Length: 244
Ligand SMILES: [Zn+2]
Image (cartoon, rainbow, N blue to C red; front, side):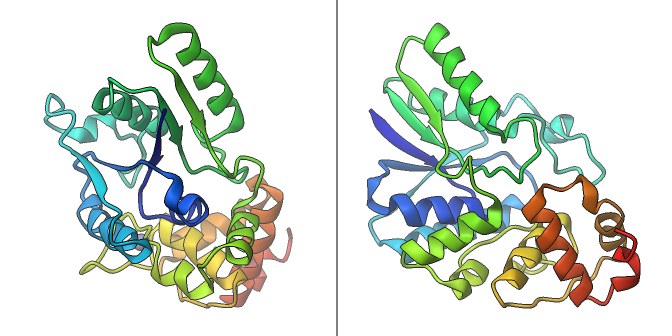
C-alpha cells in the first residue's frame, strides 16, 4: 500500500506533512494550469526540501490536456473555485499510480464547508472505491475532527514547526504578486486570520472581502467565527461586527 499526500502548499498540507513526515511514499502536486499555481508549485517544492532533501514532489502536469481552457471548470467570481477539486485530485492520483494499492491523504478540517472537504465526503469516497475499484484505495485526513486553528496549534505542539513556519513555510494565494501572497484575496484573508491567532499580524487590503466576512460571520463554524471576528476587530472593523 503506497501512502500518498496530496500536497498543495497551504496550511492544511504543511500541517499534514509535518505530522506524517517520514511516513509518506509520494507527495503529489497536480498542476491544473491555474494562474496562481505557477507560484504555488515553486513554493510547494521549496517546502518539501525544507523538511528533507530527499523529499521530492511528484508533479502531475497538464493532466487534462483535453480541457484546452481549464476555466471551463471554474464557477466563481475569482475564477479559482473548482467543484469537487479533491475528487479530481484523488482521481488524478489513481490514474498516475494505477498499478498500486493506495492510501491517499487530503487536507481538510471541520471549518471547511466545501462539499468535498467533509468527513462525509471521505467516508463516501471510501465506500465508493471499495465497491467499484479493482485496487485497494483509502482516502483519509488527519484533521477531519479539528478546526483549522486547533489543527495548527496541535501541529505546533507536537511537531518541529512553529508559528513563524506557519507564515513562511506555507503559501495560499489566488493572486500572487511577484511570487508573494497578495494580502487581498480570500485565501490570504483566511491565512491572516490563523496567523493573527498565533500572534502574527498581517494587514489586508481588500475591503470588499472584509465587508463580506463582517456581514457573514454567523455562517462560519464556531472556531472560524471566533478567530475571524478577532482579526476583523484588529483591523478596526468593530463597527461592522458590533451587531453580531
Ligand atoms: Zn492572496
